[in-house]
Image (cartoon, rainbow, N blue to C red; front, top):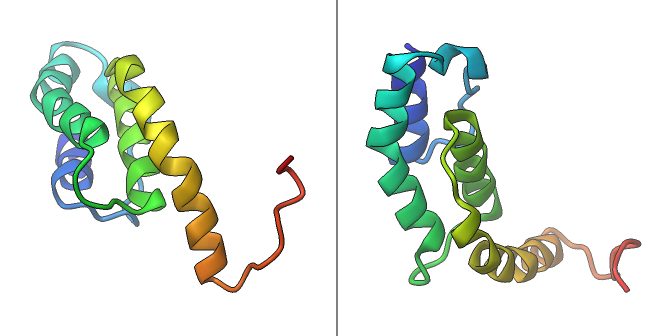
Length: 103
């Protein structure tokens, strides 16, 4: 069931799925799931074409962490895309002021 949930989270893009606990992926079965989904996760995180919502990006990062997928190389590009997307989503929701945490 845990493997089905993370597979749906990666392939289906359903951001509302509650992800299983990390201990669900201990052992050879967990390793197999990680090996199968890692290329898809990294390809989507590293992709520069198309737009991806903040929620989708965060979901992919959560699944990568859950499965122990090393996405270190993709992080600079993810941050470059995520920062403006966060501000754009906030503006679209009616936020017009600069967030308190911004310089």
